[in-house]
Length: 72
Image (cartoon, rainbow, N blue to C red; front, side, top):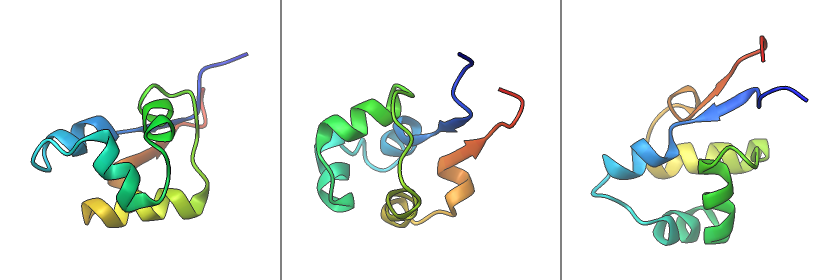
């Protein structure tokens, strides 16, 4: 099985947003802290709706949060 094709910058974005906690992001996105942890560790790829919610929380385009690599 290959590497994940979807990567993210959630940890970096949290850091640059007043060091937002995983819990705070989870509450704003309507998920559990464990979901945020799994995404940051590339163990979980979010639904499209959740991906947009997270981008909205940070106030950035979807492409600044998530990247798709078709080669992996």
